[in-house]
Length: 161
Image (cartoon, rainbow, N blue to C red):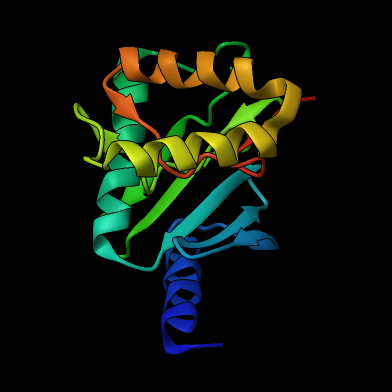
């Protein structure tokens, strides 16, 4: 485990200790960070970098203040708590269908990519989601109405039943 991963796990464990939680199973890890289930039925995500934490926290705050817990019939985790010093987010545990992982998202404006990059991205997503691609497009559109532009769109982050 690299130092960044070890540090992310250490911060998750410190968050759990401070909040009287027990970390249970690791739910996943990736470039952004590491996620654990807790004994309280929540999920704790420790992000590797402050910038990723701020992006994800701010998306969750917008969703919370907008009262959004579903998008196009998909569950969206509710923010339960966060820690700006540990870069940890505690969220509601959700089951499919769901949309999650907002560390790559942008608020109020999409990332500025050249048209050919966007076309290649869309072709890749069409292939990944196959027949579900039209529903994914609806989900993206609903997020955009809230000023949230998702970037890390993949079957692990958008799951259907």
